[in-house]
Length: 154
Image (cartoon, rainbow, N blue to C red; front, top):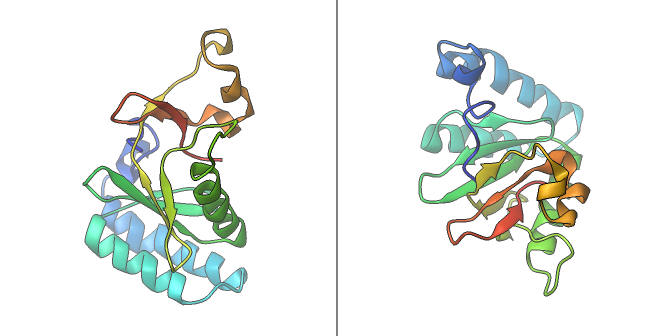
């Protein structure tokens, strides 16, 4: 999912040194959240490993999202809700005739998901888009490389 310029990185929000922000603010907060949620320390290791491989992620309320650079993203949960969202998105993306088309997503063994990147569509007027978009949280939809309009976050 290729995210719009606002919201993807720490620098988009006025942070001059995203790597410093990650090491001193974001990562310690995620570690605390993971431990408060009683998730496995494996999730901490996954976040750290992906940071060193892919760089600073987008940090959401329940997951951190890493762009892989090859047309995919990896969503790593830092809450139980994030783990549930990963499982749901993987299941919905495999549905034969879904009500809400989902970006192709696969559930990984560690509970993370790997999903195709999308180019985000900003919805200003719901009268101009398919009605299924109204059921997607915050209209988080975008276009796949092949032009299909899909949800990227449920």
